[in-house]
Image 1 (cartoon, rainbow, N blue to C red):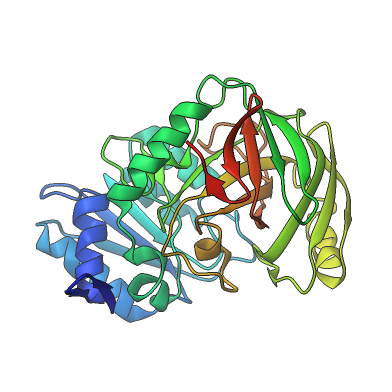
Image 2 (image 1 turned 180 degrees about the horizontal axis):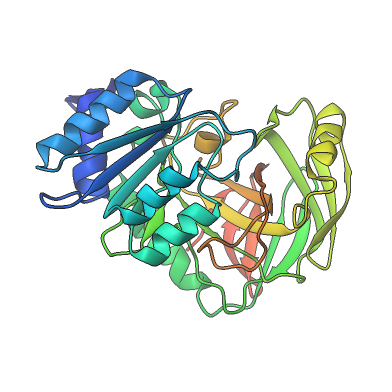
Length: 327
């Protein structure tokens, strides 16, 4: 259970907050919950009960664990996502960066298309944070990024990369609060992210701690980037596994995302879904940046990895200094 001052929140309380306050589900709407086979039924039951309390008749689609993040859900589920007013997806292999999510967004579905499967993340971790407060910070950061052209990221581990964001809209600043048709975000709330302009990223990315579909990193993964493409990857057994995963997959070496974490309740663990939202961190992704995210590279993979204590400059002006926001 999560404590806020003298108030102790149960899983049921947090489910009500998610469904009512963040997703804004209202009577008369259609609500779809999509989970995979790893999700605890207690979590599914709490969310469905919270939806019923709003006056809707929720639907629940339970799919098999996908082979990798970015793999499409079954066609009937994809169709249901596009037909719903509101959709929440919880899966160990994220279906956020899929054509199904892009079609749902285009059809007017609002919702969060990724969320942690770990029940403790909902009761003790990132899902317990006040997303309304985080959104105020996220909006300030998003405003600084809009209209900017270049972003640079350095870190104590050796990350040193420049990339263009000219014409790109910050995507994660909704911080899991969606109200308008077609608004999409992800749980846990707490990041501002965007797809760099294809072909513009150059330098070195050093990923630490954990990576999507790879898990915990025994040593950092060092990625050499030229013209928006990961050209060389080193760093031990996990780096070898990463190369094996992306080799031969069209678009998988694309530098797809830079995200900036803002959630003070997010814990560092083997779960990238929660860890990458931690305040004072950043994350880069390889692979897909399309499907409504704002880029043009369609790929069956979207793989996030973390950067600790980053220093981030926007058009030469400091916005984060070794993990501390200065906006």
